[in-house]
Amino acid sequence: MSNPQQLRYSKEHEWLSGAEDGVSTVGITEHAANALGDVVFVQLPEVGDSVTAGETCGELESTKSVSDLYSPVSGEITEVNEDVVNDPSLVNSAPFEGGWLFKVRITDEPADLLSADEYTAFAGA
Image 1: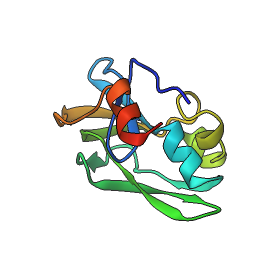
Image 2: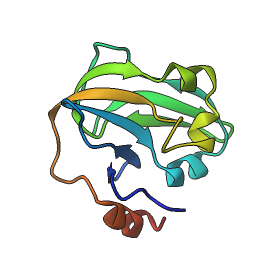
Image 3: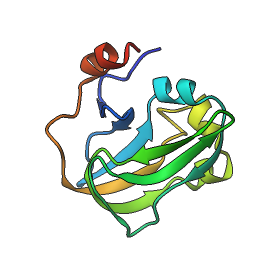
């Protein structure tokens, strides 16, 4: 399992892309996707919603459990991945590509986001 170097990671196992025009993409890590098992339902925030770093903003339901989805940053949702809503298995099959969850215009970014190497050490992934 390889965590892309260009991303930053939260201790809740979300990843965050670098901001383009102040907007970053958010998803869950491969480690989290594997721990969840087969994802069968995704509840995401809606476009225009405000999210707060470290707080829940949705849910991921798998064949094993229901897990909260946390936002790694504070900001406003600008886009949700409808492909994942329609085909939740993308979270498992392509967590760093087609399985992204939402895009957020960042208003505040916590200082405790991890680099890929730090996340790998933290998660044992």
